[in-house]
Amino acid sequence: MALTQFREILLKSRPAGAPGVENFEMASAPAKAPAEGEVQVRNLWMSVDPYMRGRMYDRPSYVPPFELGKALQGGAIGEVVESHADGFKPGDLVESMFGWREGFTGPASALTKLPQTGAAPQAFLGVLGMPGLTAYAGLLEIGKPKAGETVFVSGAAGAVGSLVCQIAKIKSCTVVGTAGSDDKCAWLRAAGVDQAVNYRTAEKQSGLLAAMRAATPNGIDIYFDNVGGEHLEVALEIARPFARFVECGMISRYNDETPPPGPSNLIYIVGKSLKIQGFIVMQFAGLREQFHKDMGQWMREGRIRSEETIHDGIASAPKAFADLFSGGNTGKMLVKLV
Ligand SMILES: NC(=O)c1ccc[n+]([C@@H]2O[C@H](COP(=O)([O-])OP(=O)(O)OC[C@H]3O[C@@H](n4cnc5c(N)ncnc54)[C@H](OP(=O)(O)O)[C@@H]3O)[C@@H](O)[C@H]2O)c1
Image (cartoon, rainbow, N blue to C red; front, side):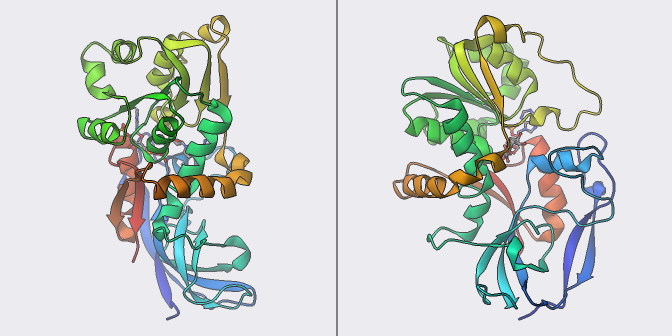
């Protein structure tokens, strides 16, 4: 049935430091009937992602900042309820960037129909979606793992990190991951990770560097960085000559109000001939088909476990987002809307 109105989440204020629920507010908006070439969609699932924190600053970046008082945007999976566009009919499942709202009317050109794979629809926001492609492309295209190498993954129990760890195991590497709780470390070991280090307890004991030296006595060949900060400094310390650094994200720095001090040991880049490359997943959009094929096969073979942390209802989206910065998720953080 067509929607008459829907609720959405607006950016009320720009977070100073860690985001909190007070930075967001919910509003109702009338649902527009679709014009020619448009489709009306009821969202079923929406994604919350760390990169959205960057869009909450009013500064230029690779994506424009969110506007105050306007609805946020993010990945979503929805069901077409009314269509005036060729190729879309009620009941079709579609992916869009019109998340953070219960529904919308938008141009069909901004929607992608989900392929018929038998996977749950929300998998296209996680293991088969943007985080999955980030892990796949970042590790395989930039890290280029070889059998027998040692891969260090920070943020290892998150959406991207948990998949990097498992793809690296499929590529016959030794994998060491860091995560922020013993439960997350237990999950990583159950998923096949060779060693999982709780960075919070390590920091209180002998320090992260000592814990990582113990976990990687022969050093590391690849560092997949989701966290930055001290983790990056430690990785520079334990890197073997010619190690590759895949700079995917630096979540430990996203809430900094003033520029943090840089790693004190960047000199290793020269002496160890390190290769350090950042990337944005969109640059690898051309790999999507191969990624779906490979990931789909690994999932059918039971070689990939994909975990989800699910919040319920549009009103829970601000809390789900804030929780990303305090370790509230294992695997993909999602909001179930219906
Ligand atoms: N380059 C790209 O195109 C691209 C695409 C997608 C994502 N990313 C980046 O990849 C990283 C992971 O993204 P994701 O979607 O998979 O998120 P995620 O890892 O599922 O969720 C965030 C996790 O980060 C950890 N974390 C938060 N603050 C931290 C801190 N100060 N120090 C250490 N760990 C912290 C928390 O886990 P713990 O409990 O372990 O602390 C939290 O659960 C992010 O940096 C993100 O920006 C980049």
